[in-house]
Image (cartoon, rainbow, N blue to C red):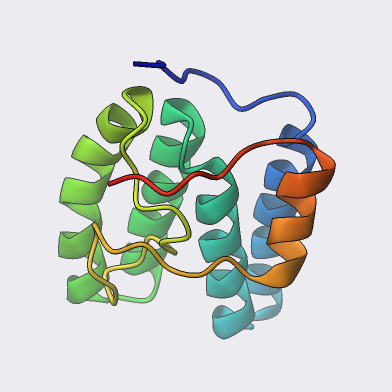
Length: 128
C-alpha cells in the first residue's frame, strides 16, 4: 500500500492557483466562481492529506461565510476523515468535495484538470 503525504511539486502550482482564484472571486463577490475554484483545488489536492484537509477547511469557512448550515455540517466529517483517507490512498477521485455531493462518490474529472494531471505525470487512479 502506498502512503501519500504532500502534494508533488509539479502539481502544487496548479493547486495554489486554484486557491488564489478562489480568493479573488470571493473578494469580488462571485460566490459561484469562488466555490468552483475550491472544488477544483479539492480535485487537484484530494490525494494528499495536507492539501485535502486544507481545502475542506476552506470549504468549512466558506460555509460559515455564506451562512450555510448544510455546508458547515457537511464539511466537518470531510475535514476529519478526508486527510486520513488521502494518507492511505483511498479517495473518490474527481469528487468536488462539497456537502452537495456524496462524500465517497467518484466523479469524472474535467478535461483541463485531466490535462494537468497528464502533463505533471500524476496518476489519478480511481479508488474508494
